[in-house]
Length: 286
Picture (cartoon, rainbow, N blue to C red):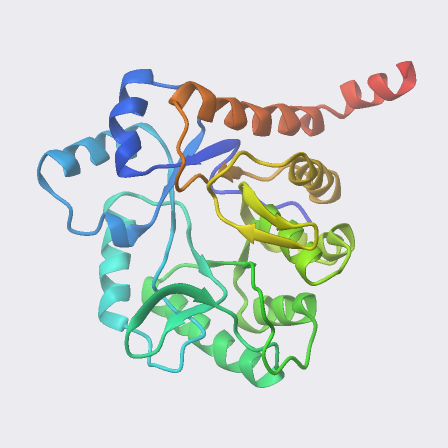
């Protein structure tokens, strides 16, 4: 099934400390940008003007941090109305969030795993449907990294696909999270990826991680993307076709020229899969 994506190509997460360097560089290899709406809602003044220049120049998607879709506390519907206004104001193409939770009555600033159970599927899916009703748009949920699986009754892939189906929402496909989880929880990353509903992919994430040990990887977004993760992205394009993919980098930010090298690497892999004739010629000449 072919999907009409709302953005295309390779993207980059926009942080406040990147506003001036990116404005000065004016890179033309970035096709879209992503922000966390919590960091920009109601931001005005000089900073708000700088941000609006970017939203006028690039298509934007939003990746939320505090929806806490799996939390026991009720949804913060006042916050969701603020998000809706922000999405409409800046003509944001897609809103995504983490398939996790980050607190109860308070915010814990961490992404906690939702139990992989049928009850949790129904609970989370109902909340996603309510979010979509309030925002008046489909949203995408991200497959998250996790380091424990409390009360597990289903596999990760069973839980993820059940939520997407029950909620009838889209998927933000995080390739690095699949790789990290496959090492930490000992499953085959390519088998997991191939089992995903490709027709639901809204866009993708790729990022670096930290090698704590041979059998323990930590999702950090603070390092260069590892070769195994690039290889998994290549496999994902072979499996589903090219989908929009964004580079995440949250700290240890290198100079813009170095950062854009990884954006170009996304574009290079996408180009390889966007031109089947070239790929076939390469195979015949090998």
